Length: 363
Image (cartoon, rainbow, N blue to C red; front, top):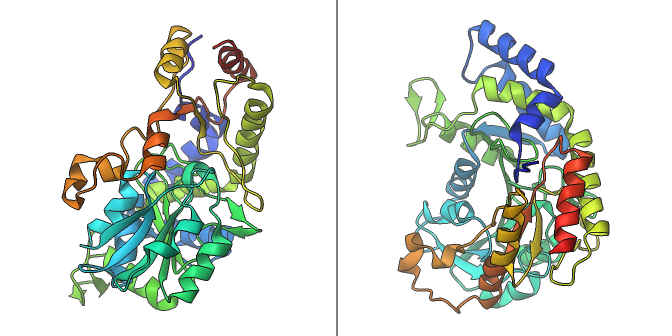
């Protein structure tokens, strides 16, 4: 039996009738951009998070760079961010001309809050927190630092839809929360899609204007904006998925609970959950010094894996201009050399789970 690292079709088949009904409803409506479906999704997603405002945009990357643009952060400014994130997090900073300042991750794969303060300079304007792999970061310490130094706080929640820290949803701690609804996400669309959430009505207004060519009213452009609009079809399909987000989250938790309890191999380091944080398991990421051997072994059993992420942003060719060399972030780099994500998706059968667990234990 071939087991893929992810199966998007399973998530579709779980609610096929609802998705198809909604798609036809939108197609037959004759309205495809910034209509009722977008407005309703924005309202419903904000309510789910406990946020005042939600603005749909075209992608998670757009959410990030528009967020920093709305906050007025640009050339000459520094933004603190963890080193072991996906490169899109850093692009959200650099597209605006600002400079990323990297901090090492903690044992939970998130930014090490204890190392942030030493990185703060007079140029620091914001902290970007990434709730990596679906687990909430240590927001108590981070929000305290942002307040102490009067810094803007942006959350990258591309992988943490529904995750909480001490009962509060990720995306609602800072000035702005940025979400991706890329199809593989826990709350995934059927194409690119994203959103910005905030409790600040002025920031909401800026984002709404900016996403639509900089116009508050059609043909009256007050700023040089962008074309970054969540379309009606994706919004409608996201509304269907949002209705089922709790059951989808519980299913992933059941699968990962099995992995945590039943994978027993001293060559494999299993993920840990921080006290006070919840994990929605966008990915189940293990560490092993024998990663290549493990991947090759699993391949012989037709079990697919993914590495999230093999090249940390500071070593990417795109960021050579930052002048950072190998060895500058040893923990980040060690993670990049040892992490591997096991198969995990909604609709994963018990038999498929058994095969993965058995293989991991026999490696």
